[in-house]
Amino acid sequence: MADEFDLFVIGGGSAGVRLARIAAGHGARVGIAEARFWGGTCVNVGCVPKKFMVMAAEYGLGADDAVGFGWSIERGAHDWARFIAAKDVEIARLNRAYTGLLERAGAQMFEGYARFIDAHTLAIGERRVRAARIAIATGGLPTRLDFPGAALAIVSDDAFHLPARPERVVLIGSGYIAVEFAGIFAGLGAQVEQVFRQDLPLRGFDPDLRMGVADALAANGVLLRPSVTPMRLEAHGTMKKLFLSDGTSLEADCVFMATGRSPHVAGLNLAAAGVVVGPSGAIPINAHYATNIPHIYALGDVTDRLNLTPVATAEGHALADTLFGGRARSVSLAGVPSAVFSIPPLASVGISEDQAPAGTRVFVAQFTPMRHNLSGRARRSLMKLLVDPVTDRVLGAHMLGEDAPEIIQGLAVAMMAGATKGDFDRTIGIHPTVAEEFVTMRTQTRVVGG
Ligand code: NDP
Image 1 (spheres, helix red, strand yellow):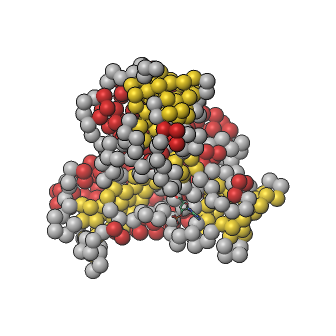
Image 2 (tube, helix red, strand yellow; image 1 turned 90 degrees about the vertical axis):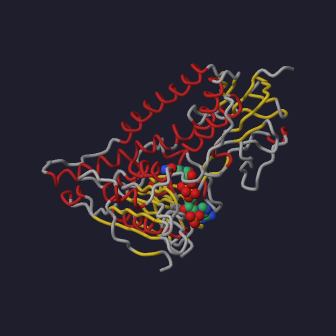
Image 3 (cartoon, helix red, strand yellow; image 1 turned 90 degrees about the horizontal axis):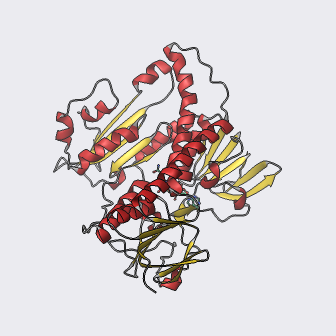
């Protein structure tokens, strides 16, 4: 049987949609299958609805802050159902935007799980398709810890359609998702406790940011329970009881497990195509996204390297250009900025202080942002630069505070271009902003290892 498609993409998320759209734009005959929702995790149960939830929480806090500026505002009640409905209308619009993009590009869309029959053939329901090349872009799924009663906890997929905003929430974990939802639920008025095994949240981030975010969570009323692990979860009517490794227990109406995500490979029948899977379920790839089977590719979260939407979309674009655009390229994972949409948010690019070589110059500024001198809210901003003592290159930039992701995005460009501390110093600030602090840090705070 002749190949019906030049490329078949499994998964209509950030990586898959970009790959299919650009490949079709290059003239390839492209098919794409999506089993759950177009746009994938980011659009449906990730970045986008999460950011709306952060905004919803921030409006409540903003109402409190406005009083210090002369407004007579009372927060009133938050209507969870109305908010979720409004959010869903926008998500549905985005779903349509994604399918519209694919349609206009000329990609053929299939709704259903795709399963390998052999290395060139896929089954989607009753339908069989053959393709010269196949790309696996199935993303990841939230993982649950393995302890008795773990299934009683919700995971991030569930958090976007809860029937009501929980009154008492226990979050398990202190990665991106736990920290973000702690801010969301606390901001919306819930009583929140966060249980995690490290001494500070956000392992892997700069130590000053980790301390700063712990303070920010506490300032938002989140009760932090560091250095413990959950052992057992029980349901008592609508109430849940979580037993911890230190012998204590917590009660809540919602226990939210945010303990990582794992590659979504179940049901693909990869063995039929001979595609090798690593021990964690991630699909190993070479520098050009090829699996061990040269015409089968994998990209985005299913490869479990740097699980961020902009990385996945960039990889999709690069693979399409490589295969059909006459421009072989791959995406560098060096210098990728990232943000955690805590309240306030934090963002980082480059190395953290604990990754910095001895001798690295450290500049730290901590202050109360202008707004909170009047709002009275106990909220501090933290900004930090790590500088190579020999080349003067800025090796890391970190910020916790309002607009941190917006500010760090700009600094990431400067750092990609090789900016030195001298370049930062001769840049004139925009006054009065928080961002100007990054170009006015004159006094070195310390030297790594000094
Ligand atoms: P993370 O990997 O960020 O965090 C997982 C958390 O679970 C950590 O606190 C980890 O602890 C804890 N954990 C893991 N295993 C255990 C265990 N056996 N016992 C106790 N605790 C455990 O995962 P998330 O679920 O928060 O998010 C998944 C991924 O999605 C992120 O890594 C990121 O790539 C992406 N994401 C990105 C966002 C953004 O860009 N803003 C937002 C949300 C998600 P420890 O640190 O000790 O390992």
